[in-house]
Image 1: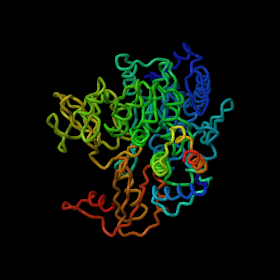
Image 2: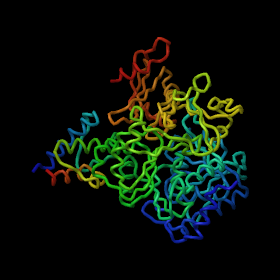
Image 3: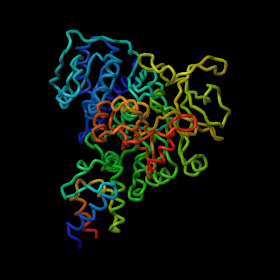
Image 4: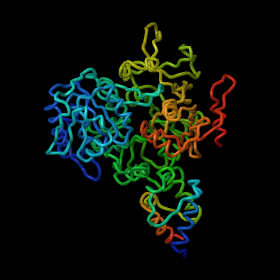
Length: 80
Length: 508
């Protein structure tokens, strides 16, 4: 099982690619409000990239309920 | 003339006082509860205004005050002028200057913010809603009594090609005619058991459909939470699911962004899924149809100038496959009483089947813009021997062999961003006024087929973030280009016109 740090590092790479922004730094408390381009449209693209990366699948309820990077890390952790 | 909602709403209150009228920010309001709030606001309006037919500006806070306030303005026989508290102050001031509202309504929740942001508001009488303890502040010794818009139901300001917003006064008769289409049982079998989702703000006219129709028939209006912010589309899906919504009007963008997740959604309660505001794509609609096994998909078209919605196409997987052009689903045929013609650049009718600019006349078409401005948007044509005033939509359309209208794109440089109509020249003018250098803004499509804007500024060196911040003083956020690029020379084509295609490729 990956540690939170590993997942966080993976997510950071995915976010940087999705938003074409190499300066993005994530921690578990980061929310959509702190990342300018992160809205409901880009959120779906992000979710899709994360699912592909880990070969996992999120339910719609999970996709809707993610409030922070920490939520995302915890959900990924139990699926991989 | 009285707006039909006034009569119907009061009837429904008597018939079904305990039915749910409104669900807003986690709270249910029965018809009698909503009526009580409406009556308090209405009483305060009437007490201070004394006459009817005046324009009343209302802050669109998307809370119970907004819904009750909109109803109270209508029921008291006045005219709604909605504004968003997060809109650019100059834009709001412009709409106030053009319509001289007699009163401005907002709740105590946003009082500090509004007074801080909009200094000009001190020139208007304000009704600040804090239920049971309404405050009425008279900034002037006398309330302005301007009844020049007395026949109107609401006035909306849309993006204008001259660089200034266009004020569209929509009359009570226009709204009355529009609502008849939905009250006609041969068109829709809505009942008081229906739950309508209201996802738009009140500066977008579809919101009046999503609120007026359910509240006229004893059904329920479910309002999208006002704090959804950037996650709005996800919240729409959540509400459709959690509250078993039966009727919804949405912009097609919502299903475009869900395309990879449609297999995870099931909405068996949804009876009517209406689309409006942008081109509806056939492939995305096929995916969406699998999500709503018991629902019907209707594609609507309607400029603000033709009152909310004016043409309808009932989607059918097989037939729509045949009829869609460039993957765009037809927009169908006009509502009864509305007529259309398609003209070329010379203002002449094009032969059936050919593409030209779509124009409307008849019911639901507004007479003119505020201040008799933008007269070039109307044209007088000889139709069946009668001189007829028609509204030019600026949309390029044709009629297919099934008699349905097909949408081919905007004639000028208007485009839609998240359902909002945008006229690019308005954005270019704002940038030009700031940087004093030639500017061209182009609309592009991302991989999901959604529009986004890129601005090119000639020679001038600028700080992109600071420029965007400055632009926000004049424009809403959705009109700010995603990227602003400095360019040595804006390319021109053989006719010395800006070569937008070259710019589009350049950006790649």
